[in-house]
Amino acid sequence: MRKQVLAVLAVVAALVGVGGAAAAGFVLSPVTMSVNPAESLSTFTTVTNSEEKPVEFTAEVMLWTQKDGKEVLTPARDALVSPMRFKVAPGKAQVVRIALRSTPKVSSVTYRLVLRQELQPEAATEGRSSVTPRYVFSLPVFVEKPDARPALSVTAQRVDGRVQLVFRNVGSGYAVLRQMQVVAGERRADLGNQYVLPGSTMIVTLPAELAGVSGLVLTGQDADQKVTRVNVNVP
Image 1 (cartoon, helix red, strand yellow):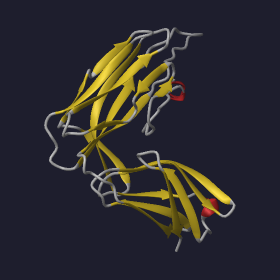
Image 2 (cartoon, one colour):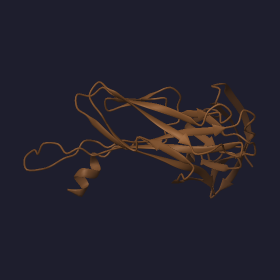
Image 3 (tube, helix red, strand yellow):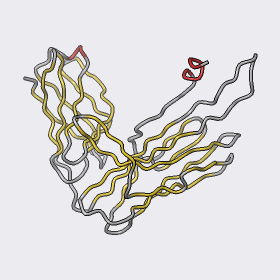
Image 4 (tube, one colour):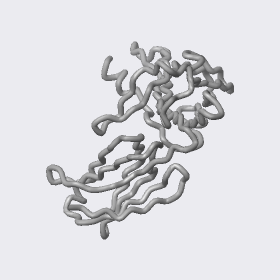
């Protein structure tokens, strides 16, 4: 039974695009939220249900940091989410709001709004019970002062015969590269998206087929959807 339940669990984590996202008959928009604390201390997203049955979620706001190259989420004490639990009827929508308790003193604070779909029992079939797929959405929330700016650098290193890209952000604002791709001669690889929070370092290990390269070109879209191109030497 455990294997059967795990097989139908679907997780959609770390949504990092712009605009909206759709899954299993419901839509979230926007999936990336920004707050200018000089103008407001709140933001929101909307969950729309286009299925023929209700969907139920729990909501939690988490403080998002990066440490030792890993994502770290801890319960937020300085931010609130409302509602914390909600059900969306077919064809209806629910607004989920995040509010800060006070104005941050630092230039940039980052959170994740975690929405978890509650499991709904299905009718038994041949003596077996089942559940609907469960979706977990992790939506970035950026609270930044108007003068917050990223300062991102990209270098390469070799570890255990593999090439790693090292992303360092020494700026006061978050950095992001979306739809990243590396090209080395005739070889190329898609790397997805990478956020680097202020003061953080993140490492991306390249596929094994790129282990022998001496240089490569990295491209991606920044937070303003402008294409960034970086030539990286590999030691």
